[in-house]
Image (cartoon, one colour):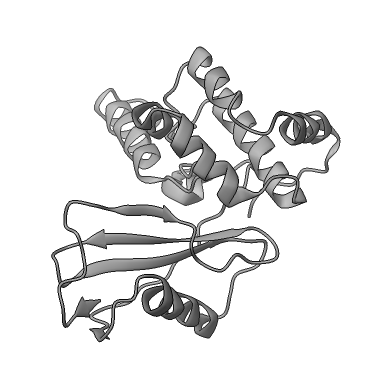
Length: 222
């Protein structure tokens, strides 16, 4: 969007603004990436079991811009939409004799955060290295088994409603050093760091979600 007056702080990026109205199932938040004092990328994101309609997303982002950010007169320069699979289901990384998947389709998305770019980088580096060495260029699983297990617990806790998503993420950002939390969201923390972050989550709901996970039905993601 481009505004008539200078409303954006080019020194600050809003990464998870939970002042958006929260849905009955899941959670929502806004993003603001300033490109200048008059221009920014404004995004509305919702973690939910069902996608909204195109009109629903447009209404939500307009409400965020008007009622939360209070941008005033603003012109929409460009728009885009996308859906990220927030799932811990296994993703097939090979779907043909010489057809390999990378990115969201190949499991690069971190299920608990939606972070994908770093996972894609790890996959493409591995593919390029394999090609240089004349090996089969199968992309690796970009996130560790421990990271995927923690994601499964968090997704179950959110989906069951046992955990208040905005409160949990705000608590983590307030109590965990920023560098460590960003490494955690990218799956690059060590075990002791994961444990220290886990201690800052609601222990009861998270443990209950972890205990019941092995008994839940599983199916691959198409």
